[in-house]
Length: 141
Image 1 (spheres, rainbow, N blue to C red):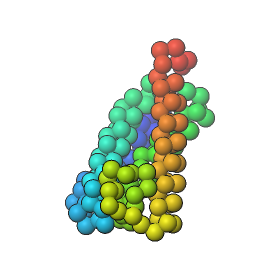
Image 2 (cartoon, rainbow, N blue to C red):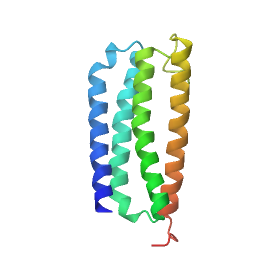
Image 3 (cartoon, rainbow, N blue to C red):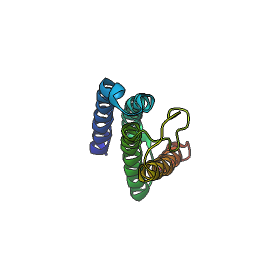
Image 4 (cartoon, helix red, strand yellow):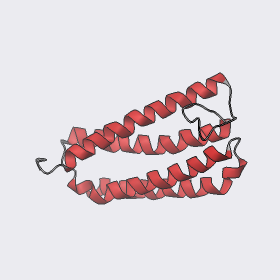
């Protein structure tokens, strides 16, 4: 399991770097407010993965469920940054009325971003529930 911990830490730092780099270009996006959101998503999701890596050895789940938790956390965090970045590039208003005030994009772009945000939400919720289950006091080793 040490390898999985190191991979989570590595991915966390990579996503943190993506967030920092996104911050350097946020004013270039069609929707700079959403660019700021993408910058923050990269930083926060990277930090989440680093924190998850730090406690990974304490997550007590079956190997199958631990694999699901791992991959849904990776998908959810990277996709959250990527979809938010796409929303900033496209200037979409899908699922983000506050950061997208006055913006709209092509219907296919709005639909793609909506689908992306919905899948991210499901993945992060699933991962969080599994991780919480694996961290409960009565979890079996």
